Length: 308
Image (cartoon, rainbow, N blue to C red):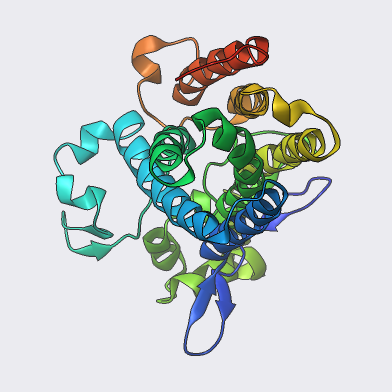
């Protein structure tokens, strides 16, 4: 199977240090949070806020992101399964049909967004002592930068892939097509990593590679678009007086980011959830609509004093 870009996506799991493997997915999260801290440090310096408050913001944001993203996936996308496996919501193990380490598979950005907003409400009241919209207008700049790297992490993990395509952007996601057990079974190679490598590179397994369809790299589409959302918010904050319009940057972030998400969903494979019962749109699109509407509200009322 050939196509213009000829990309067979089968990256290593991470950087092997011998005694420890730094997984690319985890590394992208570290970069996202680290860059977010740096961005907010510069903002806090400009606004004459203390570093102690920034450290608290970092902790609140990290915990809210991870907890919210996990619960968002459970509630929005896979409740039918997790309601009968409650321990697996917070434990990185599967107990049936056999005990298996799974990691935390499933993080939903809509859940993270809701959780961050809630966390910022309490942070603004208990720590910052400023209006909620003040911190939301600024933290969304860091969140937009983080979204870029989270989607890159999804790309490294071959997850949230797009639908089949014949376009020049199509990529063969081997790890999406074959589970580790399937790769081992089909190649008779006991190590899953080596089995994947054989499918991707050994002519002996070309028949298996031919079974891997071209799919849209939806993660890269989102990541690329989020660069522009981040750049726009950063420019408006640093180079204009937009930051003085309470709620405007927050609203712009909601509209821009979730509109991109809504559009990219058209080329994504279904992630499950409640779309089958509602129809018309995917679960991700239905969840994006309220954020877009809320964002429009804040944009059009930004010059008015708003109390939440």
